[in-house]
Image (cartoon, rainbow, N blue to C red; front, side, top):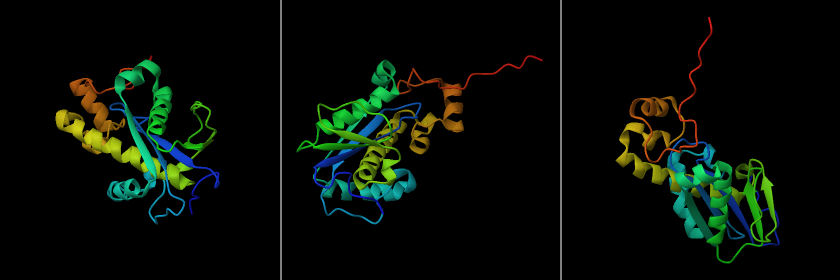
Length: 199
């Protein structure tokens, strides 16, 4: 069973991102403060849930949260500052949206940069350990999925409605055939390098 938070006595937010490993679209971050009595039998790491269950949880989490924020960091910014910095920036911008401001920040993963002077802790696989990080992971994933489904309408040849911008064989075949779109990350290796064998 997931724990509510790290420090029971503090107003604590959880934060996570989605789309870090994608070739196209934004990296999306979310931050959330949950009430002390929050629980839901489905709530766990978003990667363990079906798309349908994530979408059903999204409005429940939004309705019951004390506060939440979601941020897309777009491709040009990712290309300028790199994906790790863009992910952390997205988390910071999501925490900016929280009212009241948290007294402690719990982050999924192992990298973060100080947010003002608020104490924080990075938790590897935190979305499978803490409810607020799991809730943030679901919001980040669902908001990003919905955004990629909108982009799919504009560029259906990449089938983003299915692959959401991740480097699937089908996605890479479409890049090879059609070239990159304006929504692809220029700083990412969109196609694997062709290896030549010296015979």
